[in-house]
Length: 597
Image (cartoon, rainbow, N blue to C red; front, side, top):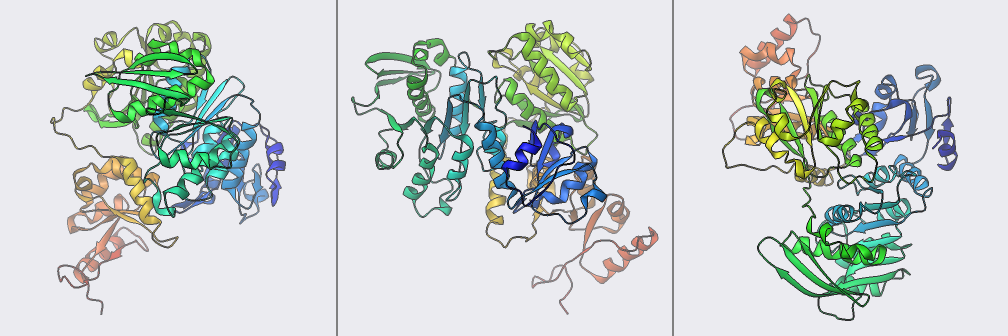
C-alpha cells in the first residue's frame, strides 16, 4: 500500500510526503524494527509511554514514514527525508490502515471472541484446515486494539482463509475491531469474569462482544449456554446462529455422546442429517469444548473435513507462551513449542531480538522442517531465509530432510544442517554455543525437548513457574487506578524475591516501568551487564561500592548526612556536576531515613 494513498484515506490534519513509499510493515514498538525502509511507525500515546519520544531514534535507524498527532519541530530542517501524516488519533489511524488492507481481500474470515479459549480455538482450526487453505491468523493472542490491526496487516494475495481473535476490556471497543476484521463467520467461545471490571454486568459485556458479528453470515456458539443463547436470539444482528448442543437433538450440531478414556476422547455427533465420530487426544472439558466449536465451524465452512479422522486424532495441545530458560555456558534458551509454521517464525525471531537488544549475546536459531505449510519446499524455505536475513542471527541450525535439501537458500548465513536431532546432538555444534540467546522452534515430531535438556541448566525437580503475562496484566491494572503520568517503581531486589531478576526486569523495561529498585550495587551491575538500560535505584548503597554506582549509572538511596557527604565526595572526584540520588525519609519506623525537618 502506497503512503500517498494511505495519507488520503486517513483524513490528515496535516501531511508531508517527501518520497512516496510502498509500505510493507506497520510498527508501534520501536524495539521491534526490522525493515526500516518499508516501515510506517504509528506514534501511539498510551498509559505507559508516548511513541513521539522515539521518532528521532527511528529516523536515525532508517525509518522515513510516521503517523503522528503533533509536530514540535521543523522536520524539513531536523529530519529532511521524513514523511509524516498528522492525525487526531494515531491508534484510530492504525486501525483504519489495517481496515483498508482487509478490504482488498475477498476471502472467508473467521472472527473469534469470548472470555477464554480464543487462541486455542484459533490454533485448533489452523491445524484442522491448513491442508485445505493458505491461512493467515493472529500471531499468538494478538487480539487487542493494537494487536488486531497488526494481525490483519499480514494478509496478502496468497491467503485463502483468515482466522483472527478479538478481545475487549471495555465498552465501545468491539465496534472498532469489527471494522478492522470484518469477519464473514464468527465464533463466541464462552462468557466469564475476565475484564468484568469495566462492564456493568455480564450481559452488557456479552452484548458488546456480539458486535463483532454484525456482518457475519453465521455465528457458532454453545446452545446449552443459556446466557449466550438468549443474547444471540435477541441480538439485532442478521447472522444465522449455528449452535451445538449436548441436550437438544434439534440443534444444528447435536453431540450424541462423549466417551472419555485415559488418554483420549471420542465425540459422536450429528450434523445436517449425517452421523460422525471423531477421536481427539484430550480429556479435559475445556479442550473438548474448544473442539466442539471447531467441529461446528467446519460443518459450515468445509464439512468434508469432519471425515478426516487423522486430523482430529493428531491435534496438538497449544502452549500459550514461549518458555525462557537459563542455559549452561551463559546461554538463554527460548523454547517455542507454541506453533511451527512460517507465519509464527517472524514473531519468534522478533521475541529473540527483544531479548538480546542492548546485550552482547549472540543470536542462535534452531529450526526444524516446517510441516504442512501448503507451500512448495522451494517457496517455503525462500520465505524462511528471507525472514532470517531481516533478523540476522549469528548462527542458524536447520534440522530435517527438507531444510537440508534447501540449504543453498541459506548460503549467505553462518549455518549448519542436520537430518535429525540425533545427528545434531552427536555433533559438537551445541557445545560451541556460549553467551547466546538460542531460539528453538521445531515441529513436535522432531522432539526438540532433547535439545532443551542438553542446553538448560540442571535444576531441582521442584520448580516455580512465573507467568510474566500475568505480571504485566497486574502492572497495567494498578496503572489504571492512578492518575495518568504517575511514575512506577518496581522492587526486584534479591533476584526479584527469588523469581529471577533479569527476565522480570526485561519484561518490566519492555512495558515502560519508570524505575526498578535493587538492594545492593552488585545486583544493579549484573542487570546493566545483561543489557538493562532503565533507571535503577540501589536501596542500600555501601560506601565501598560508590564507584560502581557511578560506573554503572546506578542511583543511590541516601538516608543520612554521613552517606550524603561520602557520596558527594565520590561525585566530585569523578568530575561530575550533578548525579541523581533518591532521598529516604523516616516516616515513623525509625530505622533509616532523614527526619522530615
